Amino acid sequence: MKMSGFDRLLLLLTSILAAYQVSVGIDGLEALPVIAYTIAFGVLLVAALLLLILGFEILDSPVVVIISTVIPLSLSFGLVWEHLDFLRIPYLVFAIFGFAAIIITRSIMSPGKFALLILILVHGVAGLVIFLLPIAFAMTRQSRPGFAFVGVGGALIGVGGLLLSFLKGGRPILSRELILKVLPGLLLLMTAAFLTGFANAS
Image (tube, rainbow, N blue to C red):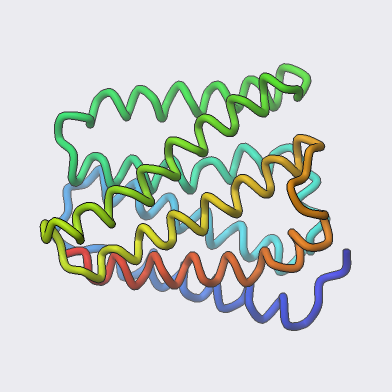
C-alpha cells in the first residue's frame, strides 16, 4: 500500500514530538526510569522516521516486531521502577526474559502459534501496565490528573501492537489496508498522549 502525503505528515509530526520528549526528558527521576523512557521515545522516533522514509513496506521485515517490542517494555519498566518499588526486580526479570523470548522466537525459530503467543503475552502485560498504572495513580491522587493521559497512550499502543502482531502472525483482526490506513494517526495520537501525560506526572 502506497503511503499518502497526509500519512507522511502525521509520521513527521510523530517524529517531532518523540524527538522533543527525548531532548526535554522528565525531571526529578532516578537514572533507570530516565534511561528507559529515553530508549522508548528514541525507538519511537527512529521507527516513525523509517516509516516516513521507507514506507509501509518496512513493516514486512521480521526485525520490526523485535524493535517495536522495545517501546512498550521500556515505557512499562520505567513506570514500574518509578512507582512500584516492590515490583522493580520481578518486572526487570520479566522484561529481560520477555524480550529475549521474542528475539529467539522471531530470529531463531520459525514464527508460528508459539511465537505469536509470546508476542501477545509480552505486549499484553506491558500494555496493561502502561494503561492501568497511570490511570490508577491519577484516580487515587498519587499524581496529577493529567498523568492519566499516559494510560490513554498505553491503550493506543496496545491496540496498535495487537493489530500489527496479528497481521505479522498471518491472522489479521482487520484488513491490512485498514490497519496501515489508521497506523500513522494512531502513532501520532499515542505520542501526543504520552507527552501530555508525562508533562503532568508530578
